[in-house]
Length: 326
Image (cartoon, rainbow, N blue to C red; front, side):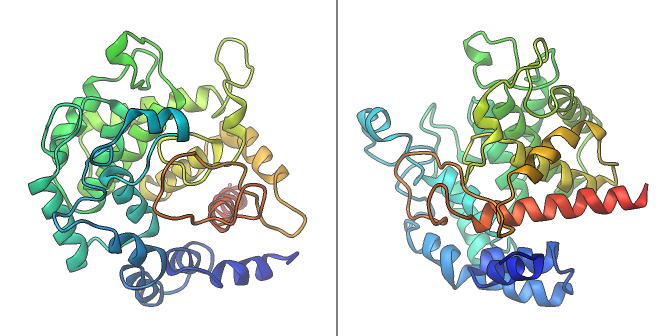
C-alpha cells in the first residue's frame, strides 16, 4: 500500500461513513453516487450501530452531556464518558447521517422535546453555558436543520479580546484556548453553511480563525513554542480535543464554503502533516480520549487510521490544488 490508489482502495474497504466521504472528497464521484453510499450510514455499519443504542426518548445513555446516574468517580478513574446525547449526535454528524432522513428528523425532534442539559436543566437546543459544548451544539443543530441562532448570538458575545474563546471564561479566564476556539469555529461555520450566517457571526468566525493562524495552529504567540505537544499528535475521535489536523480540515471546509484562499500560515502545519505520513502512504492514530464509548472506530493507537488518513489526504489534496492555481 505505497501509492495513493492503494490507500484509497484501503479506505473504500471500510464503513459507509468513510466510503461516501472518500467518494466525494478524494474521487470527485457524482453526487448521486456518494449520496447513495451516504444513505447507508443509517442502516449499515457504525452509523446503524450507534443509532441502535438510542433511547426511546431520542437520547443516548439517558442524558444530554453525561450518562444517566453517572458517578464522578468514573471520570477520575477511567476518563470522561462519551456515550451521552451530545457526543453521540456529534459522531453521527461526523459519520454523515443524512439530515433529511426521517430517522435524523425524528431524532432531533425527540431530543428537543426530552433532553435537558445536566448543568441547569435547559432544553437541549437552547444550549448550555460552556462555549465548547455550545459550539458543538450549534454545529450539530445547524447540520440537522435546527434553529440554533440564539446560541450563535450568545457565542458571538462571549468572544474574548484576543479573538477566540475559552470554556473557562466563566471562571475568570481572559485568554482563548485552541480547543474551545475550534469547537466554536466549527459551529459558526456549519451555521453559516446552513443559513448564510450574520455579519456578526462571520466577523466572529474570522477573528477566531485569526487567533489560530497567528499561532500557526499550534504555537504560543509570545514564545513561539508549541502550546501543547499533543496538538501535533493525531487524535480520533476528537470529541472536544484539538489537534492541527482538525484545524486544517476546518480551514479546508471554510475555503470550499466561502471561496477563501489558503492562508500561507497553514504551511508549517501542512509540512508537519506531510512528515507524519507512513511509508505505506497512510497516517497513524496517535491517541484517543480515554473513557466510556459505545464502540471503537479505529484499529488502535500507533496503527494506520482510516479516519486520520481520510482527513489528511483531503487536506493535502485541497492545499496542493490551491497551490497549483496560484
